[in-house]
Image (cartoon, rainbow, N blue to C red; front, side, top):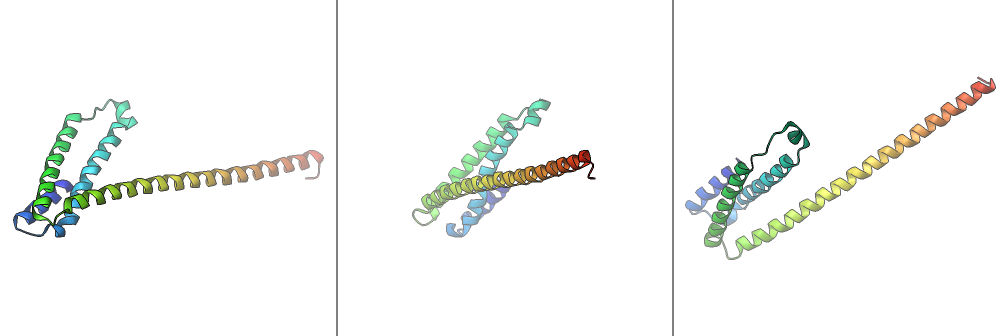
Length: 148
């Protein structure tokens, strides 16, 4: 839906003769929606609950959505090349590739931070557990020796 809305805004603005440079945010929304669609499909495809329940992913429907997005993307490319300053589309593709790399690196950093937090939590649990066992052992020894 986000892709269709952004596409509609872009198409209407270009038909009205608006500058392409002012539409970068809408183009970004459209292309982000395309990436989101692909990520959503991968998540649904790898969902163990859906596999266990026997729910099949509608590959044809997903294929149709991707084909429609590819067609709209080609139209956006031709509009940017036709109505925008020279090199607008190429700069946008480069920017998009750089942004994709940055998002991937951010996901990796977040995953590393999550793993480090887990390791710290496990270490704290082990230390507290070890102290508890040691205290229980000392109490037991004192009880056996008749001191408590």
